[in-house]
Image 1 (cartoon, rainbow, N blue to C red):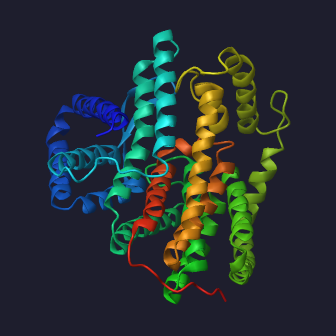
Image 2 (spheres, rainbow, N blue to C red):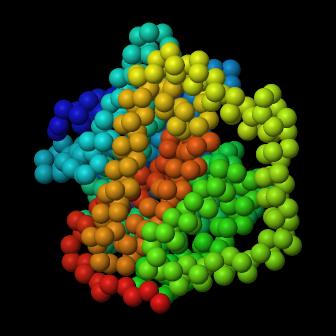
Image 3 (cartoon, one colour):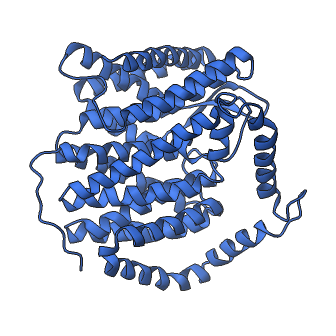
Length: 445
């Protein structure tokens, strides 16, 4: 085990033990239930850890939340059921790695060092903030643990993928989860949110990922039935995305679609076809009232007069927060920042990163995002099998869309967006190591 992996493991064990202990202490009557669930997950994972990962994939969007306590008057420490599943599966993985010396805890990937740099910067600068009294230690370490969860999902998924069957197995769980979320979305009457979640931006960000991968699969998958299924998923998701009333998601979708047109121009005939399908949906969108809802939401943005901005209260408050944090907070600690959660809640990924980890953390974060896209692009060019190119193309477009989404949302730390994101990234980075997959290049019609 490398020194970096050992440090991460120690942090996970300590925070995981605290999490489980806190959960039980707050609900002693629930101890039997927690024990049954824990042992069930452990047994399943020990029999076949891939089944455990499948359960984790479903729980990413379908798990309830448990409030462990309040860190401020407005914000709570919230744990989701998939946090518990992830910890248990990780410990099983740790045990298997200890027994089988040939099974490394963390396999080498092109992204590892950038992940280590980012999590290292977050941890060190937050520890500095705790010592200075700027960060509540419980809140800061808890949020860093949440960041670590994404990378654990990435490493475990990558480690377990060896064949095409492994990819198919995991993707079936992901598709099943997406279908459940879509069905749940259509049961709602007003704002569209994810199960057990109340944030429209979260649902919008997740739908961007689903629609992007569906679009990529439609462009490159060699089987007609899969291309048909993908286009149906894309079209069915479109009304849901519009009904989220998430302006960040609207901009993200436009950016994602433009990225697909620009990056994958060899599929322009298929892109034209899907554009025609969207235009054919316009009468339905107008007649169902979705068009009025979207227009009203956009007009509402510029209809207010809040403070110094001629915007609605939400947008004006967000800009006011950005201005305050940049001029009064970041300027005081421009290089190292205040530490994660050091300045409270900031609803904007780039401003949040700059204030909490300074210029150094911001540079490290942007480099990591750049390398994610760069490595995904390498995989896209390297592999020859159409289904893999489709997943990769969709992820690349989703990545670009989320860059825009993150301007007014904390997209790259939102659990229900980032867990699917890092899972898909692990699948993509693992594709070149799958042997014996040499399909003919796909000729796009």
